[in-house]
Image (tube, rainbow, N blue to C red):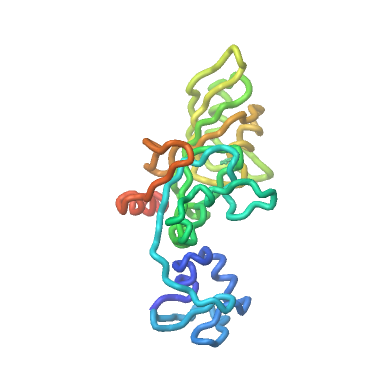
Amino acid sequence: MERLQKVIAQAGIASRRKAEELIPEGRVKVNGIVTKELGTKVTSSDLVEVDNVKIEKEEKKYLVMNKPRYIVTTANDDKDRPTVLSLLNKYYQQYRLFPVGRLDYDTKGLLLLTNDGDFMNTVVGPKSNIEKEYLVRTEGIMSNTTIKLLEAGVVIDGYKTRPAKAKIDSHDKKNQSSLVRITIKEGKYHQVKRMFESVGFPVKRLTRIRIGDLILEGLQEGAYRELTIHEIKSLYVLSKK
Ligand code: URA
């Protein structure tokens, strides 16, 4: 027996949180009857429908992609720009994959994709403790004093960011810019750009280079591969630390 919201999330239709909204909204039927009760338990022989469409148990897929710049991470884009899903081949397009969190249109680097809502919630949900590391090209010559401010936490939109780790990689005196590595455990909207903005160093280019112990090694821009079972387990463990 599994909870209804878990079954919906596992089918890749919605995240657990979204599934918890669909049920009270009356959009879910069990054996033909609308069920608004969140705690409802179902077995694999029960017929579950969302918006009158029967849910199928889909094989779970977990991909890591090296997202190029100028690609959106949403499934559809109102401006018709290319999406990360359009980079997938026909085989993976048959799965209902979705990005695990977002990278901005002009950010490149490590992006996870899955059809497992539980995995997504664990890795990027509000309770996740997983590290995300970014390489940041900023305007201006940054000092270690400013790095310490970023590490201690800065206020963005009235919210103080959690402690972070940051380090200057190099300065480009000619172009008046700095290359900085920052590791954060959160993923608020435009978080890295807003953190750097708040200390007076706007971001020129941003690349995510690591999530947990997963790095981009060997993946060309636009390329992707399936995670190994060991990598999936490790992401779960690090998210819950
Ligand atoms: N922080 C940002 O500002 N943008 C991203 O794409 C990721 C993290």
